[in-house]
Image (cartoon, rainbow over all chains, first blue to last red; front, side, top):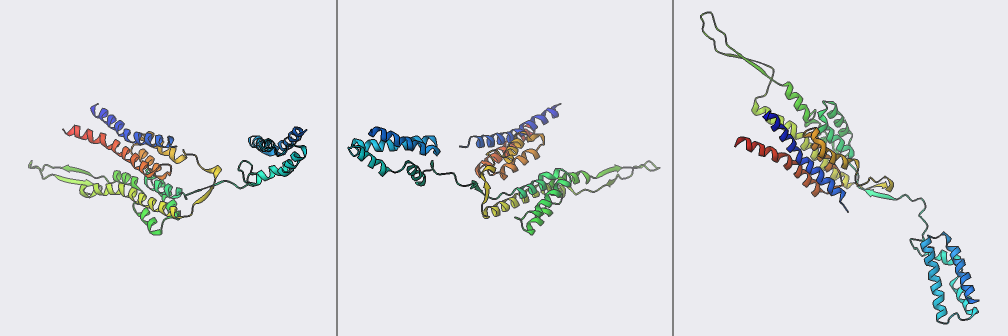
Length: 33
Length: 293
């Protein structure tokens, strides 16, 4: 149980970097004058 | 009587200027009206004869409209004859990008993905034969082939002991089947096999980009110019945001798309790469530290 939960927390948190990068690029492109 | 002459003249001018844009038509008539009124106010056209003379000097209304066109007023200029509007863009490296992506990320589809990438790479004209050889040899089959080979190259060992008739236990005998590298060779080899193709792909894409930049710009009809959000940009953002569905490979492909796009500046691409890597590695590091402490 502990391993499974830890795995999912790790997987979800590792997603945060690419997610943030994707949002950053989308915002930069959308808000370009 | 004199006012009737002026009204008649302006009416003819208004009709002659019918082909002009409405705004410019009104403007032109108004300019001429002001000119006549100014002359009359100064006493230059107080009699009918003087007024006729003034109108003659101004010229025929048709001539005024034609002259206004010839002066190059952009509002009056006729549209250029079927000259298609073109935009000059730097040459794209779509073929090279497709080759690099297929030979790295595409190798997740065993053999076929990498092979298609290799065919594309050999048909690309912005790489030398030496560079194509490098891409093919580092590494054949692509990084993901290493994963498949690693799963094949397993070694199973069994240790057994036997007891003879006197009851003495023999020395344990270990028998292994299959092949395996010792860990100090196998692990670095696996890492190199996984990493090197990406390094080579990055190097070759940089060279292709530089060579494409040195080529003359390509004229593209303005009607075909892609909007700000082209396919590559959408792919980059979608793969980064939702790419975790295919762990590691998805976000990595997103970053490759972002780097291949010219919609973002190099600085923005570096920031996005740093965010993606730090955001992905930091939680892992925190978790490892928390576990060891």
